Length: 290
Image (tube, rainbow, N blue to C red):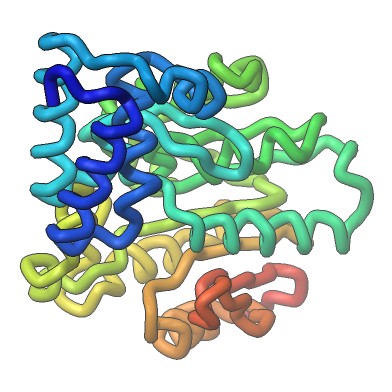
């Protein structure tokens, strides 16, 4: 691509991505060229006639090879927008996906049903990864305090950094443990996007997904291991009138519902994502009895 203009390189990348079967070739080409040249969308358009030098062409070729090998664009550029927040991601974290915003929507709905968003709330995000769900909620709930847990110290370091980047670190703590194991309890809201892929299905996942850390994907032989662990502990974690909101894998709504009902939780209908897949399941401890 040396000697090409920015516009020519963008078209060439788009064509290469399209021929490789990438779903969004034009968008990915624009993002990668902007990343390689350090230009935002507006500056990239203004630089359309600029000629690439040897170093820029080499950098762009390496990035293009990574994308053609199905490394997610967010991993290549090191960031992903979620709920309006640009989050740093690394190999230690999942790439936040649009469908996970359904969990944020469901969580805010139960908070709104209970009173003003300005009230003091305690939130726990089990398996926080990059901190996406927790930080999205804290950005909407100005008097809330949250704890994100994760087994990965590297992931927690990313979540802490994202909290700092968005001015949320005074209200966000990160703790290394398995789901809620090290938490005392008394939370108004517990949220989680747990590992929910059955072990035997991981090898046949789409190439982009297989770049996510195994620990964040593997849900055991039937994909429900994490849900069992959370369900068994939820009564201890959530205070009366509190809520649990879980992300669901496709086709898991009925199975997870049964796990939570076995703990005498009161469930609301699962909320679907934009593709019509039941994605967020809300449970309440309001009327629990033994």
